[in-house]
Image (cartoon, rainbow, N blue to C red; front, side):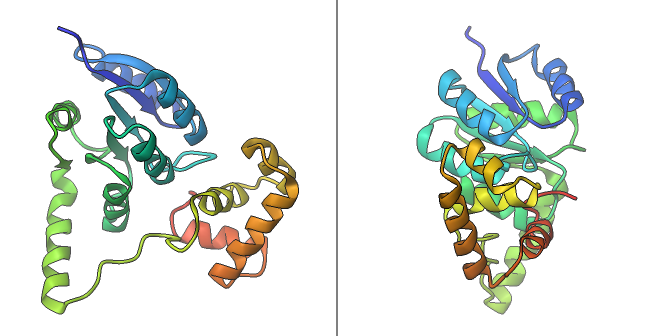
Amino acid sequence: MKRPRILLADDHTLVLEGLKRILDPEFELAGTVEDGLALLDAAQNLEPDVILLDISMPLLNGIEAARRLRKSLPRTKLVFLTMHADRTYVAEAFRAGASAYLLKRSAVSELVFAIHEVLKGRYYVAPLIAKDLVDFFVESRASRRREPRPVSGDLTSRQRQILQLVAEGHSNKQIAGILKISIKTVEFHKSEIMKKLGLHTTAELTRYALAHGIVQP
């Protein structure tokens, strides 16, 4: 019987090596990548059954990568494995197209089980965060509060990516090279981001990205 093919995406080599050992007995490992842009390229070339990805990755974070993958590879299942337990991240991950959300401190058996579940067309949320999500929705219904808006929800996909690259310390010239666009286009997007967010300097953009989990300290 053909084993399901999995693509791994995490910017920590030790994590990738550990995941390989865990998953190899039951799944075919299609490949590994360490940043969001490499993930998009590898996913298009490999067309895996499942992508196991982190949220915090350089060049393009996992949430933004998932949004694009949902459009280009709608049949591929997206499983987030991350340290972020906050329900805002969980909600954004599922909005972006996730089928499962687990924490890196979850049990090994839970990860394998979750992958099998999504391959059956089901959804999975780690028990460590499931109760918090239920409490949140119960509270929201009782108080008729709306769910929090997605982080940087008013920005376009390109603008969210440029915001991340700016916060990672890349210059306009470097961003232009990474995204294969002109420096003037980068400057235009950066200006539009500042207008939408009501910010005025690169330092403020960086603080915003850090505060909203777009990049990690």
